[in-house]
Length: 227
Picture 1 (tube, rainbow, N blue to C red):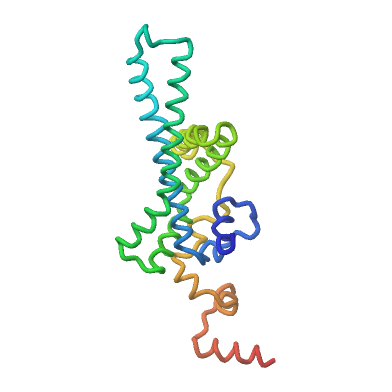
Picture 2 (cartoon, rainbow, N blue to C red; picture 1 turned 90 degrees about the vertical axis):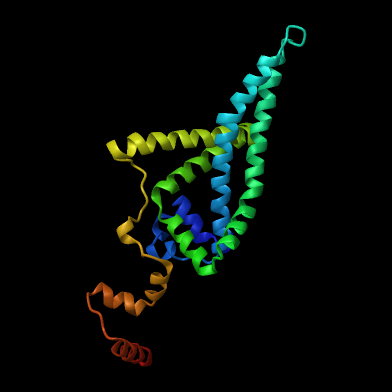
């Protein structure tokens, strides 16, 4: 996971103390990170389409096709398993197509590495979208443990459903316990701004409320290094 440590920490918040505005703006592998995001979004869309729309529609169609001559005690069970396999294939297709669509989209847009990095940063600081992706990811792993990719679809849809409850009721009317460590006001405006603010000397002068001129900052830095 070399190069994705800051992404992983921002996504999971496992290491609370290391979550800083500098780490959020540190995006060493923007293309890989953007491909991961595309894969998540494709998976969420495929789970919803395959599990919520296609599965019940196809199941209804197959049940309506049953006749007394072709119906057995296991007919409905066979139909259910067939539809569950179908929804699992939707998810597999999404997992495979996510990185490809990411590459195709960036090429179609003509984005440079800086453009992709800026887009990844906007994804990192979008707290509501992160909640959805986290819930869907947790749901996927729980469902995958239960019934592999077929269960993963159900888990993602449960995550999407809980996010709808969170966004419509929990967030506006309650005080959620689990929050990101940094607020929008704590973060940089862009990775470029973070790059310009990367030296410890600049951060020191800003913390004491003093902004030296570039010439004096260089002189002070030289004097500090010589001493």
